[in-house]
Image 1 (cartoon, helix red, strand yellow):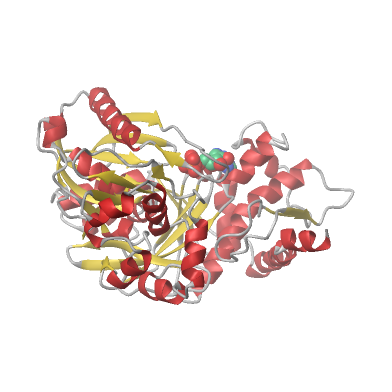
Image 2: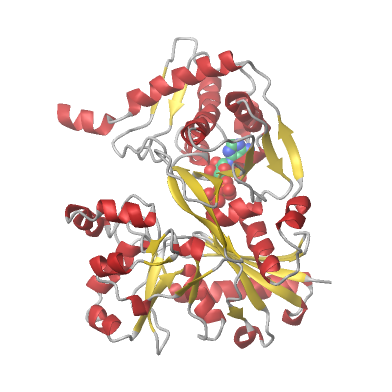
Length: 497
Ligand code: ADP
């Protein structure tokens, strides 16, 4: 019997899964990560805690499965992307905390790069619109703020990387210093055509190349875990979390996709062997397998399931997020009410930090059921906004969904109705974990290839469109008007004040 270890290093927790080849979970471990908030808008993690909790949950998963490390044939890793750290090559001590993707402390560094005129070069080389979200400015920030760090980096005493590189280096007994290409594509330092660190950008950022890991294909042999577990479990696959979700949804062909409905929403679409540029969406590397690179386009929406948390915690209209399905189903429509959840502005595809949330279209007849239904619909319309942006370049014959909110059947049906395509919920809604397991197994040769994996992926439910396109479009037109009204709101108010 072959068992695979799936390591999932997330933003809020470390998890590990032991599965059989089909992805059936035999054992699982999970531990929370401490969120460190040194100042408003900054988020950091203790890098040592990441290693320790990860080891702890791997051991817990083995215990629960009743297996020992020698029973494991392969391991795969998926991780929070963009977050970055710098550590001492000799002692292994981080010189500063891991700066988490959402942290804004390096914003002025990126603004400085843009002022210097680097914006176009960054976008041309990496596909990314310059932002503090990506790793480069986080590494720059650490080198600027820790005394003597730049000189030490130049002397070759320091290493820098994303979470995958940190875990690989530690779990392989400090033997392997590697990162996979999907993670590297989110650093704003990798040339997304050559899949190498871009020397011109590194020079502009003043980040020494010798502190960065080797970029390798996603199904490479990253090393083995012998030093950690006393037996040579090969780590055969690594993918950043969203790419891993796309892989875990068996979206191996052009146009295949996934939309994750978690706190935020993230759509990833396989766009084939060439990078695509789509207005409002971000191109990245999906994965590179056996020398073949697959590109993707990506769209993040800040408030997806988060809107349900707001209904629950702040408005207290529901007791728990799943209640939204029952309440929303008590009325046939919102009766013209739209809820635009731009609480922190819009990300893809509208990109407006000044937008603010609104509820519009209420009459005397509006009650809480309409508001709750409008909140569920906001998840649907925001998805359509992404799909409309993508459709100009990629055909999307169907939408594959995952994440905590997809248990909501009304959401699935509304998505199919609004998008006019089948919406598919897989049996395994833990797409990112399943992605790590299957890329690890693929790297170890436990699967014959992507065809076998495509066959193995199983559908739980297909939602088919049931309403007319006219009805869907009329409803969507109202949404677009509401979005327009929300745009720039904070700026408008400040100007008036
Ligand atoms: P994350 O990984 O971002 O923490 P999850 O994938 O666990 O998120 O999904 C949790 C989110 O989904 C929460 O924001 C919650 O409000 C929302 N959610 C969970 N169940 C439902 C449901 N049945 N209907 C609507 N939203 C839901």
